[in-house]
Amino acid sequence: MEKKDIKSLTLAELQEELSGLGEKPFRAKQCYEWMHKKLARSFEEMTNLSKDFREKCGNTYHYTALQMVDCQESKLDGTRKFLFQLADGNMVESVWMRYKHGNSVCISSQVGCRMGCKFCASTLDGLERNLTASEMLDQIYDITLATGERVSNVVVMGTGEPLDNYDNLLRFIRLLSDENGLHISQRNITISTCGIVPKMYELAGERLQITLALSLHAATDEKRQQLMPIANRYSIAELMEACDHYFKKTGRRITFEYSLVGGVNDSDQDAEALSHLAGSLCCHINLIPVNPIKEREFVQSEGTRIASFKNKLEKNKINVTIRREMGRDIDGACGQLRRRYLNAHKETDCVKNVFHN
Ligand code: SAH
Image (tube, rainbow, N blue to C red; front, side, top):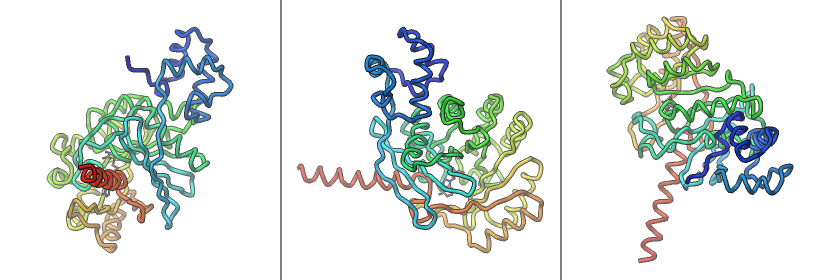
């Protein structure tokens, strides 16, 4: 039988589990704090727990641990990009950014992605598997250990579609914001989705204080369908209704992400159409100059175009910012570091095979 993943259990679940093994409730609390507060990387590190107990845990439970394969640091702004190997050999990437208001980590929620957005490097090879809650937490825990600094903001904007891995995501949010763990405020956690409408409604009902970001990228169905396959499934009208519901239910303002792609969605008419959509909702727009990937022809909008797009929105009284580009010099776009690594690895394997033949 497969061992249970102990780091994905809530404190209440862990208490129940360990009492089944004949342990007192305070043991569970100690063990939980070792995992989620002191960020132990194995049972062996839990030094105030008896050797017997640690051995029993090791025999009964699986303890996730990532291996850092690569870490690149930007010379421009200190942003660090990490490549981690999971226990089954799969790779995920995460990014650490330092802002005036604290350190922010961008994590992956899946190995690969099946959403197929045209400009995104993470989805080119499809979905490999979901990450467990513990594997999402581990990215933050290992980065905290590597930098020696507290993480205050978490964005789920790396590889993967978080709402396509809903149950693990919810578990992750609850563990991350738990007062017995890192206790990161839910207000400092942002989940970015390409817009899986039924899951947005479900999320609205979870009584969470997180920020929801919607990857909009176009203001008409026709244009959105050219960029994002999910747009064939849900219309913009349905999305706006879901956003309105989310705001009314949670009181949390929605963020719209809009990647500006040169000649595709960056005209003055596009800005007008976007103003019209955004004007009816309590939202904030984040403009992201598209990060070109070599597998696709998309180019970034000219600087003057970006400025004029933003002006148009501001004239229409829309709340808008341009996302500062962090770590441009270190495989900036989502999924690029992992892809480069996997491709290089494939080549090495080929070389090895040739060698062996
Ligand atoms: N699947 C989720 C989260 C991951 S992507 C989502 O779709 O929101 C995080 C954000 O980066 C999304 O807004 C996505 O559309 C955007 N993105 C992906 N690749 C990009 C690129 N090459 N340039 C600019 N933005 C990109």
